[in-house]
Length: 87
Image (cartoon, rainbow, N blue to C red):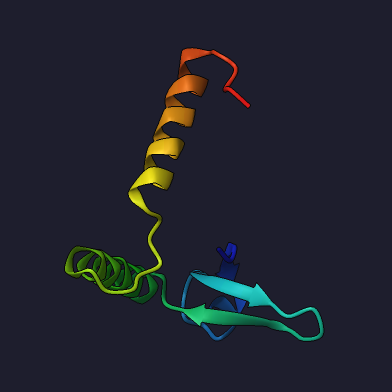
């Protein structure tokens, strides 16, 4: 996930307070905005729902399998209980 930072160009252009936006930095280039946070959030939600539909319909998806999800859940429950997880 890219960092959420203030966009100083907005204030410099006389458009009020700096706007928050997600930006990324290329190793060999300048910082670039990835778009409006609200639009990115909506796109992310739609993409997640599309993956769930694909899972339910038996199509290829990028979600973890049920065994992986259970392993994560069990690990978190173990950590919360204060017990060292089994290796």
